[in-house]
Image (cartoon, rainbow, N blue to C red):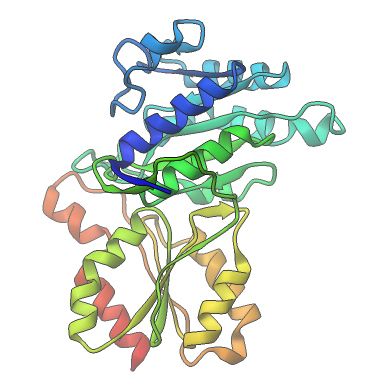
Length: 326
């Protein structure tokens, strides 16, 4: 199987292209996805290839076009709804929480909702408090929604294709600063099952559990961690709901220590849930309490230096590692 190196952005575009080409019921809808080719150019070329009926530019009305997507899914289509940023999904929160998530259950299984909501999330680089939020814990909280957060082009491509084919509503959050990240992907078509974590690095001293940009925070701190004499294992969850709990327990039982790195705030976060799972299922395997490195519990500052200090960074991660190991 041959491989090619592409960007995270190109992986998203390839997944959309392949699924729209494969299935005529797949269509794309969102702000500036057509003629402008997406705020981050992830939909470049799709309007030219598939036309206005399947690549639909919308007004600035997230609640409206999210509802149209849910209705289209109820009628048998497979819409992909792009939020220009997941911060804007809050305007459509009722549609996702009360309609997309619950329609299959409330209809007694009469209405599957095969809709994928996708777009960039997390801090974007000096975009300030209203445009730099990692909101995955809000959607993880709601039964009926699946939540996917890939960290690499390989994972973005395989997981987005699977998400589009899923008969349930999927919240697919792309790291806002990851679009230029490059990596190898197979030239042939491939899918990655939801709920399957990826062991990105084997190690023996402690387990880093992360997803999306959290994986890259871990990589940025790796030199400092290794200089300090530690050999970490890195588990990338990739899919948060369903979550690969067995992979979490396996790595923690191997190393006896767990460090969770996430981009979101500390209270009631995904990391809080993962920590709870570890404490309840691996308590007697732990040699130290589970630690987390998160964004500081403040609205995101606009200033570049304050933003960097607010997010997980090598110095904060190394300090947590030293506490975990000692």
